[in-house]
Length: 265
Image (cartoon, rainbow, N blue to C red; front, side, top):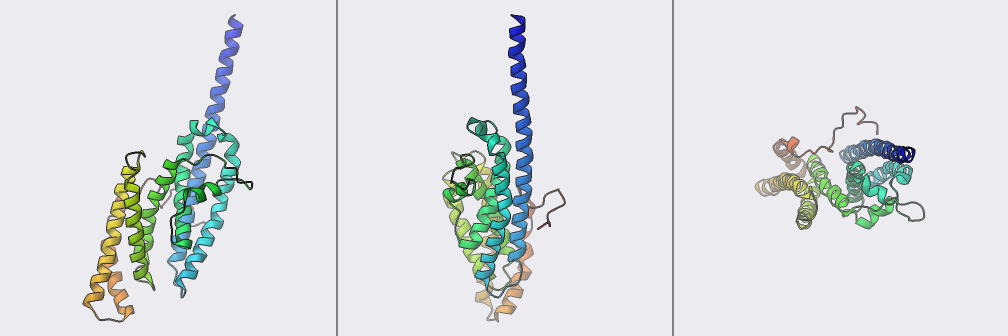
C-alpha cells in the first residue's frame, strides 16, 4: 500500500517538474519574441524617418521589411507549438501573453504602413498557423485587442517624428483620425477585457499629443502665407512641446529594451 502511494506521488512530482520546465521554456520564448518584436518596431520607425521622394513607396518598403523580420518571430511560435497544444495553451497563457501582444503590436504597425488599415483578427491568426492553415494555438481576443491598443503609442511617435518632413503634415492628420477611431471602437470593449481600460488611458494621452500637433499645423498654416519649407521649419520647432512627458506614455513593453541590442536590425 505504501509503495503504491509513493508511486502516485512520484508521478505527481514528475508532472509538476514537467509543467515548471515547460513554463520556463515558454517564458524564455516569450522574452525572445518580445525583443525581436521591439526591434522590428525600431526598424520601422528608422525606415520611416529617412527622407524619401515617394512616401507611399517608402511606406510599402517599410511594411515589407517589417513582415520579413517578423518571420523570425513566427518561427519561434512554430517551435513551441508542441508545448501549448490543447489545454496547455490556456494553462500557460500568462507566460506567452506578453510576447504575443508585442508581436501583434509590431505586426499591426507594419500592416498600417503597408495598407493604412488595422490588421484583422483573422490576418493575425493566419500568421500564427502552419503551411496547411492549422493554427499553432487559438489567438485570444483579449491579446489581440491589447496588442492593437499598444499600436496607438507607436502611431503617435510615427506621426510626430516625421511631421516636419515631406508629407508629414498630411500623414499626421491621417494618423490622428485613425487613432481617434481606434480609441472610440476600443472603448466599448473596456468592460470585458482586463487591462484594456489602463491601455485606453495611454491611448487617450497619445491621441492628445497627435491632436495638439495637428492643431499647430492648422493654426500655423492659417496664420502664415509661407512656402511649405518654412512652414515645416516653424512646425518642427513646436514638436518638443508635444513629445515632452513621453515617459508617461511608455508601457512596460514599450520601445527601449535593456538587452543592449536594439540596433541589431
